[in-house]
Amino acid sequence: QVQLAESGGGLVQAGGSLKLSCAASGRLFSMYNMGWFRQAPGKEREFVAGIRVSGGMIHYADSVKGRFTISRDNAKNTVYLQMNSLKPEDTAVYYCAARWRSIQIALLEHEYDYWGQGTQVTVSS
Image 1 (cartoon, rainbow, N blue to C red):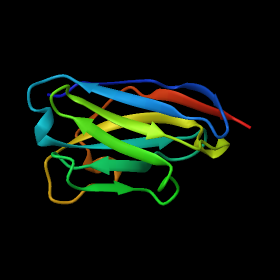
Image 2 (cartoon, rainbow, N blue to C red):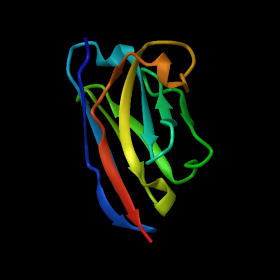
Image 3 (tube, rainbow, N blue to C red):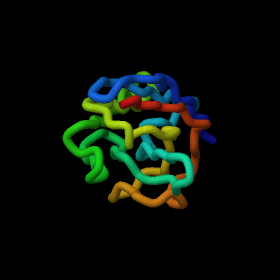
């Protein structure tokens, strides 16, 4: 069982930055691939970024590539999402998710085993 808790969301102007954190409980955090998803009002939840167990493989959605950076600190049981050059269309609830270690980074919601409660990110124009 893994419990996830996101933090770091808030209101920011377009062009600004935010850093989200996702703290995980349990001793096996390093055995999980981690992902960030987001869900905007009226839209489906979508993949944002994912990172493998050791951080050796990373994948981004095209919409955030070059602006967002995912990283993890296995010693702290935490995964991060640094978001720069934010745009109003980045406004959404951001969720972190955990998937038992696999070769590929999963892109689909149903492939993840555990989810956090989400943190709101609002980007004003």
